Image (cartoon, rainbow, N blue to C red):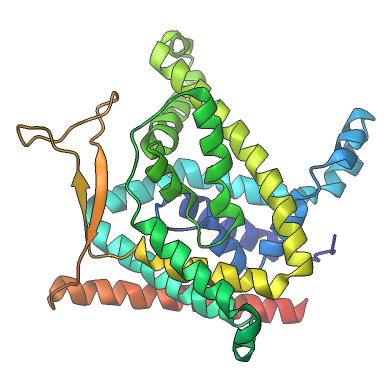
Length: 340
């Protein structure tokens, strides 16, 4: 694997990028892989995950832990995973609050960030060479847009299905433009896996630290912890599988892969389109129907063109802000790369 030289400040920035990547993974329609791509550590992330192989197992079985840590680029993974953990128990909860109270503005900011990401990714492509990979770009756009119009399914807590959800959900981390959290919405398990289960883990940690071990006697809490454990296991398996596949295609078909990714990212704009309303499942009396856990069942999303108003101008402002943030970070990372 290529050696990536870093200074102390670079690890601080990597931690912040890990926090951003973790937060992006939780937001439906936004891909954490885009953060990795724009942040300049996507290839290192993929190639690092490829190191979870037979050689690593041999190093661990022979108790050569230091060698194993170095082999899997341990410093990089430790900092990045720390960012994920911090994000899931802080930034992600803040995002939940912002989406609840300022949903359209949040979507506008992410819409702008994705536009900025398109600019950042296309810099690595030669646009004049469309005849070689243009069809992949078009395919990616169509696939991304098509996903945004699929209807969500009902919640399913079968453990085999939860394991499958874990494998599929990490697509957002390894394949920029494909939102793992939005895939979970389509599979019907977003609330179960990224809200209820994560909150159960958070409440359990708080209870343990305060000496309240009685929480383990609560059947619902233990069920959610088991579900989260199976989902995490599936995510780990998915990360390793996808990383080996993407590592191969990046090595042999890098421009074609970037073209496909650029298409996915462009197509994902349909998912985070700010002006949309949520359509819920309604019973014969006109009331919203809920699942077994009391959550309203989402049927689809209806998108519309906005009217010119103060709210629309504010949304446009957040879109511009999102573009500026991502483009600025991309230019900054380019300067760091030139320095290294």
